[in-house]
Amino acid sequence: MFRNQEIPSVVVAELDDDLLAEAFVLDVREPDEWDRGHIDGAVHIPLGQLQDRVGEVPLDQKVLCVCAVGGRSSMATQFLNQLGREAINLDGGMHAWQTSGRPVSTN
Image (cartoon, rainbow, N blue to C red):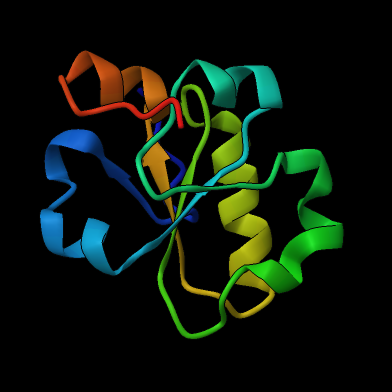
């Protein structure tokens, strides 16, 4: 998959448990997508609401942005980094997450 070198990103295979444990996982998908399954512990803020709800994203914690395949989350990553957050895009998104056999929560 094409990776924009200006947007920090990580693929699921390179995502280590330390980064996952320390990161604020931000899922920017739509509610119906979220309901079908998400990363356990993730916070749901749809991309269209992120500008208004950016105060819910911590300033002092890495942010791992997630969507379905990586497009919307790359926009969220770019937006957050422009505001001074340390954001990283999950390239391949939930599709890659699930394909690699990682656990999915529906709670």
